[in-house]
Length: 273
Image (spheres, rainbow, N blue to C red):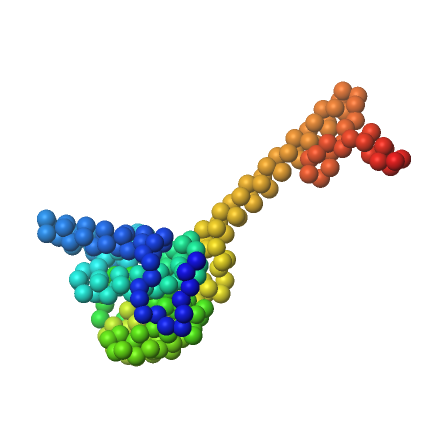
């Protein structure tokens, strides 16, 4: 497994979850770009995929995930994908692909949840809290979650503060981005800023509470545990029915709590030996 020193001067390997995330976002970008050149229907598709709290509440339940696949601008898309490559690849050098993918998805979902919460508060108390209303798009929420995870787990690693040739520790870089997002709360893009902070909090919460192998590993383990409990319950029920049947035939058999047959002869032999 690759390890990084105290300074990060090159992009990590493009593999595993990092490669999948980059390819998925690139495919979505070019699909919408080609569709926009072919017809105007791509704009309607992009509008349906971006996260709009009001539209989401009217049944567009896929938007908390699909908004991250909408990248309208070339430079913004390039910056997002390079950041995603750098941060996800760095984390994947220390953790497995499943963990990184789970962290990214959780950060996206919490980003959308933060935007939805701000929308609900604004509608209830003060509509001016929303600022300039616009749907969420781009993978910035997942990127903020990845960055927060790096600051929490690898705070002493130094990054280059682009475009300046200055090194800065990861924890300080996270603080700077958080302060910028907090400052944006007082502008017109406060929904974006609040959502970005939500993505960072989602990444931190995932690091603190999620299993080391990722959320999908936890779900699979829970599923297998539930399935095994069900099979054990069926075996115990079958054992009880068999006991009743054997008593009706004039014979007595016993099973333990796991549904296994108790051989009384063997027990007697063990007792006397």
